[in-house]
Image (cartoon, rainbow, N blue to C red):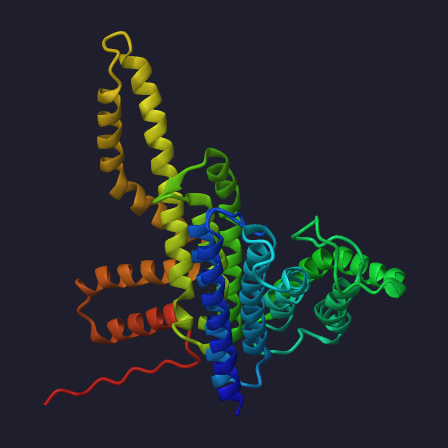
Length: 401
């Protein structure tokens, strides 16, 4: 029954996404009020958000008692329904006024949907990840606030008098004037509590990570990794946005933002379903190595182009020579720089595996010259203790016949 419900919610999200794409095509050049970028990018972003529903369905169908799957399903349905409702409202109110009924109602419901969608995909997930339980009882008040934001907050928005958020020229057709004071307080509470709730839920996740061990720590590493990469990439996204760099007609900053948003459900799915769970250390190591390597090579290239350009300016006005020389220098530097950076990362962040590798290398060197079998056995047991750190080590040698 739960499996069927999970995939039914996934199918609903897919249907709403298709409806949203249809309205994007119908609205044409009319800009949707929640547009992030071009219509093409909005379509890609909407489809990418289906990852929340897909991962949620996989988790809910396999681990129905874990609320993370159901939260992702609700977030996916909420996001796709908001897109479809805003497409409807845009067409009914702006593109072809009066052609479809209920444009204003679609607009106010879209105002309502975004808050529970945000809470379900962030605050509640961070509080409950990875096993569906709070880190401790002291986090219950924060969970209660998050649940209130996802339930009571939308009711206040639905009944509050005033202009719509996405369509400021339209007043709320469902407003109840007699409840204006109460609904305004609810809306103010939601507006003021959403950010602190999200920040505190991230703090809870960080504290859980510090106290974790074993498989739980590996699960949490996936989320910490995604968060660290996204935070590091944020300044570069801002720079790319200001520069307006495009790829195939889509702003590169928008495209990278969509990838970063889609990485959260992927990481959560891999962690909870324990798909390639133990690969996280390899992923982190390669990210560190190639991230630092890329920054080093880019800095070297730009610096050498500038220096060579200044040095060659008395001889020639053509900058192609400086560019060619800088490219050759970076190509020659690549392999050596990668090896150096790899060694530094291993020593700084993976000391145990680095020391184990050094120990094995030293043992291999001694093995060539060792002739005493008893001494060799003792040396081998010492290497196993140092690298593998087992509770007990014994060596059995078969006697020759």
